[in-house]
Image (tube, rainbow, N blue to C red; front, side, top):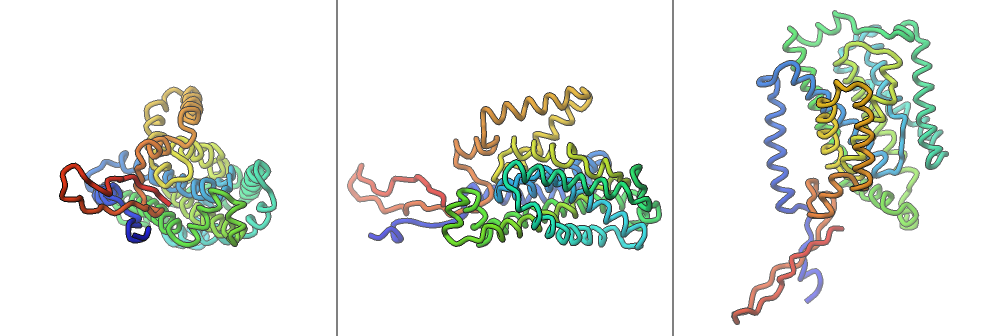
Length: 358
């Protein structure tokens, strides 16, 4: 009997199907949050969604493409300023301005990528931070947008989003909810595509991937540009919720990069499940310890160090290695077919149920 006849190849497992059903029910419940949650709860959930979106994008960049950037705040701030500029001077609807911010972010990411891709390792990370500082200093010189002190979104623009405060808050919530769904779905579909397979090969062994004919530079370039555009759109949405922007807030390395790296590292870098776990843990710690002041940051650092020592692959990596559980079916699983047992008692074949994922 050939190997093809004796084995099945599939993506999904019963655990994946159960997770899909539970996830769908959860999405339905969260989509209806404006009908059952208070204003404070919706604001908190919106922030969780946007941080999860940023963490998923950074994980795609660093965990899969191997591009460890500490300057993604450049695109967060860029998206916020594009939104404010279009809304204030162009009279553009904030929703359209968010889409425009994503396009501007992707277009600007192209020359930036062509420049910093000449750097490797730590030099690349430092280069991304320098680019972000250039962005911050440049926008601080724009007097029309408030210069160094920043600017607030005009009341007329805010009121034009929807009729009534409750409707505006519901719309802002749905925008944040839609953003995280789009980001996770886009990352999932991309990783299941041929280009995503090439990206996974680069993550596992860049030298071997290149020897197989994969265009490493082009693959990383596509990922960097896509992540830059989506990060700018998420940044625009962040500052639409805040209603005010300033250079220091828009290009803060702590808010938009350090916390995102913490989320991905403790959750599990190089997996779609990791940012979800990391975001939940981060907000539990933040809501529990925020009143402690600077001690809160010390505790976050201690937690990150402890997780990296105990579980270098993150909390989800620890769970995955021990149980083999994967919520997002990205790879293929090869398992032996069950064979009919012989009529003689005690004699059975095909009892090996081990799985191998490729």
